[in-house]
Image: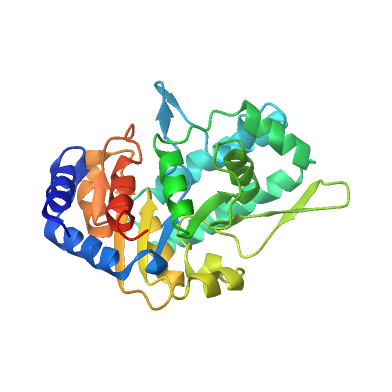
Length: 301
């Protein structure tokens, strides 16, 4: 890697709110990815609070599930039950003292219960569009630059989310980056009846701790498409997101970038073990992953 590019990246990784335990190793990995070229690269990203902000203008931002709860189009009973479930299970999801098995079982129960509640609300496709229009989903700054860079270089971007795939696709459609050949969304997809009413969800349920192999099993064409993309940039915000890569084979190089959006003091050490790069300011943009992608792609496009 050119000396100037090395210095710029090194400075970026040294500056708060970026935390990188082994800068030299990350720089070396970027160099190997760059040498291999764009045809070997892929990006695997979470959606909620990774591509989107957790807060905007001092207010919490809605998740893809939360879009339904905050829409005002569903019953008060649904909203109350959904919020009670969140109060019960969210602390379990973020508790670093519980075992992975405990978290996995709890998340499975939470997701299935919420999905069942949704199917009782007579939700239509048109209602989903209205929900997203009225929502406060805000993409992180530089998302459009990142999307465009990957598209121009024909680098696959797979959004692997434990959220609602239908909501995510509608939200993406509202941006300047709509459906493109290099974009895939893996998530909990709704099943509709002849009247376009949601009646069920696809299996298996995808939650925050079974992304990767479990979530990719129903996308064999995507797995085939990615099999020769041996260099991977993973972007996430949860303790489960680094394992999204578990569904991929023949991986040579991986860089994992994590947004630590809460409990910085308590969780930084945990996140530094899970991610190569940790960004601790919830208001941060996608500038860091974008810069790494540029370093890999600029001279290989």
